[in-house]
Every structure is written in C-alpha cells, then in structure tokens.
Image 1: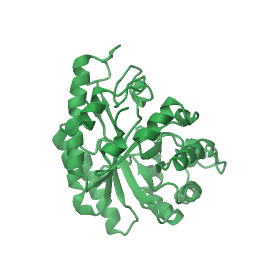
Image 2: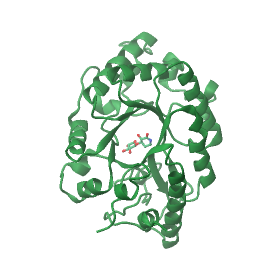
Image 3: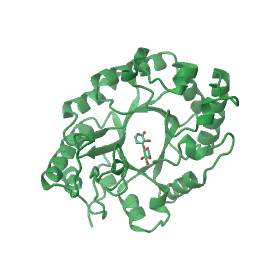
Image 4: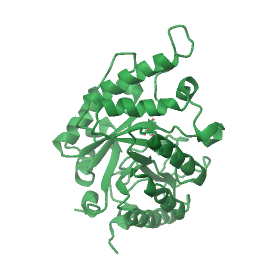
Length: 332
Ligand code: XIL
C-alpha cells in the first residue's frame, strides 16, 4: 500500500499521466486501479488526435475519446486535450483539395474551424486545457522564427497558429489554451518559443499556457537547462505544465538492453529526484506535471525511435513501483 503520487504532490501541482483507452476498458483492472490511485489528470495519448477524431472529412468518431472522458468524470479526474493542430497523425485530406493540389488557405481554415469547433465543443466544460498547437517549432528547418516547415506553414504561414487559438477560444472560452513542444530546454528552441508566445500575446491571441513535453534521458539535458526552461517564461503571464515527461535510459539509437541495468535504475532514480526538486521549486509557475504513460510496458519509447526495451517511467512492466518512484516520493 504505497503512497499515492497525487497526494504526495497535492501542495505542489497536479500530477497526471497519458493513457490509451485500452488501459481502462476494464475499469477495475490493475491499470485502471493504478491510474485512479495516483493521478488527478489524464491525457488521451492518441484518441483526440485528428486522425482519430475526424479520419474522413466531416465524419467524426468519438467512441474512444468519450470512453476516456467518461472514465475520468466517474473518478473525478481532470482531462487535458491533446492535440488539435499538429503535423503528425493528421490525415492527408486536410491539406489537399479534391484534385491533388495543396488546399488554399481559405479551405484549410474552414476545415480547421469545423474540426476545432466540433472537437472542443463536444468536450466543453469536460476538458480543462487543450494543446491547441503541438510542435510548431523546428529550428533545423531553417525558417524565420524557428518555425517548422509543415504543411500548415506551407499553406498559411505563421498565421495558422493564431487562427487555431481563436477557433479554440470561440469553441470553449473557459478552456486553458496551450502551445506544446519538445526540447523546450534547448536554449535556441526555448527562445524561439518565448518570442512566439510573446508575439501572440502582444497581438491579443487567446493563449494561456506553455507545455513542455520533457521527453528527456538519464544523462541529458543538464538539470540547469530544465530549471531555465521554466524560469524563462515567468514574466510572460502564462501557465506552464510539464506535459509528457519520460526518461529514456539510452544515449543513442544503437543501444539496446534486454534487462534494465542496476546502475541505470539508480542513476534514473537520482535524476528523477533532482528534477522533481526543480519542479517543486517552481511550483508557483508549474500547474501540472504529467507523465507520458504510467508504466514501462505502456510506453511509446518501446517503439520510438527504434524497437527496444526502455524503462522510462515510475512503474515497471508489472506495475510495481521502481526506485524512480521511491526517489520522488521520499520526502527527505
Ligand atoms: C505518441 C503516442 O504515445 C504513440 O502511441 C503514437 O504512436 C505516436 O505519438 N509527442 C507528442 C505525443 O506530442 O503526441 C506523442 O505521442 C509523443 C511525442
């Protein structure tokens, strides 16, 4: 009978996890039990992405996302919406006209508006925060302002970002609207994100939060960069959340272990502790810390970037608490 994570951190921040609908089909099974005990915020990992909710134009499917939202409601757990506008897991039809040419800006905006209205509108009052745009920055693409060279950008330029926030705000004026991205600790990308949020706020765009995915490793990045990642946005009048935390044990794509080396279990635990100390220090800025999955079986890092075992989370493949769990729960 171990301590509940949401209790341990109740004076600091919301504590969440992402999940797949398969984890809660059995609402009393071991996965669902673990979720109910430890987490007070849930993010559907795939069920609210465009390819899941509107695979064909105008044909919406909410079976799986409804199931998660109902489970959350029954158990008094908050839900984060992930995600409305992204370059990935978005059907191709969104970007093309009937003839195989890129859609016009007008057509693209009409589709965006209808999609966002329908999805956000359905969960009005049930989903407290939305990742309105996800991963819109990619400095390596070489575009001005560090923007990603996505089809969104190619059709509409930077403007699609503000349109997305405006449509989402119209659909649910109470929802907290986030921009979400990874590697936001890297100074170059962090600063592009800061400048983008500032531009949007200066224009009066309804943007309320910055989400730091925080997919990190046992040996990178330096803890100081995670500290500065949060510090940087303090003066912008936005909420911040750690939205997708996990900690890969690998340094590159070529490594592969069959079992989790003991020294890495210990290194991982120490590092989780160090990082949670930083998060606690920033409790006034951070409204939530959310893991991308709860256990080492249900983690995307077993297939990304290559197929291999990985042990990035607080609970192991058998849902047992790891050293990493004890390291962040230990009050000393
Ligand atoms: C991942 C899911 O966990 C996987 O199941 C899916 O195959 C690919 O997407 N950043 C994000 C998330 O914003 O949406 C991604 O989720 C992980 C990286």
